[in-house]
Amino acid sequence: MRLTLIILSLCISLCVANASEPNLTFAKMVENFDEYKDKEITVNLRLRSLDRELQYIIFYDSKNRNISFDYSNSRPIKRLIKANPLLHDGLVYKVRFIPRDLDERSNIKADLLGYEPLFFERLLPYGKAE
Image 1 (tube, rainbow, N blue to C red):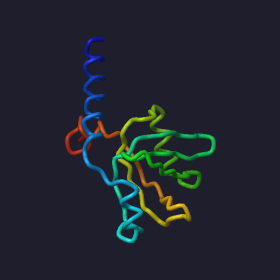
Image 2: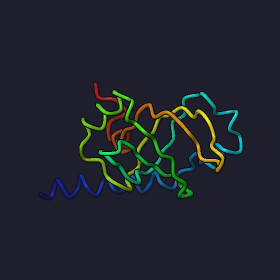
Image 3: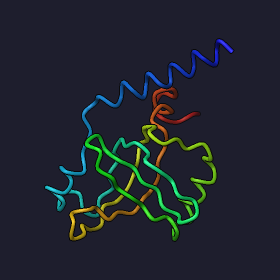
Image 4: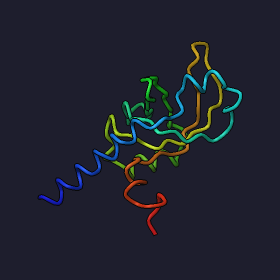
């Protein structure tokens, strides 16, 4: 029980510590969209919500601006979501995506490539278990 509390507090502190680090925001991406268009981007974002029925996932940046991904036609993302049933709103994730276009309201349309909880990277050096 005590070990569980220690591990939980460690995970929470790692997430909070990372939230204060400077990250790329969507506002900066919109300003210089041609720099980022059709290139793989990795950004630390928080999970806003996941709708398993309509098959979309929404993340938000440090300025509280959303980006949503429709994964209804993406088998790899469906497998990733099925393999990670314990996704938590507000938790920081390392999100990989490719920006494709801007709509009329300057919302970024992008293809989601993957995501992983950021504290995994902190707990496992180099981001991967051997």
